[in-house]
Length: 89
Image (cartoon, rainbow, N blue to C red; front, side, top):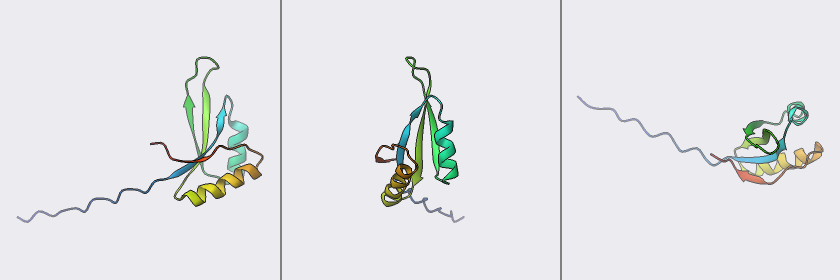
């Protein structure tokens, strides 16, 4: 019998994120991002000195250009975002 071969899925292109900040209580920041319809995700960081922090990142974005545009939008929301970086993974 003839075996069928499945083509490999294309490797996803690199994605970009913008560091919004690390907060003990990120609710005010995530509410701003929600109201601006800005995609974001959070990560809890264990920190024994200050308690847990929640890292907030905008994105991911498919291109650096889209992330740069989001960076400007974040500044317009009164936030002090970091730089555009490839998404950690």
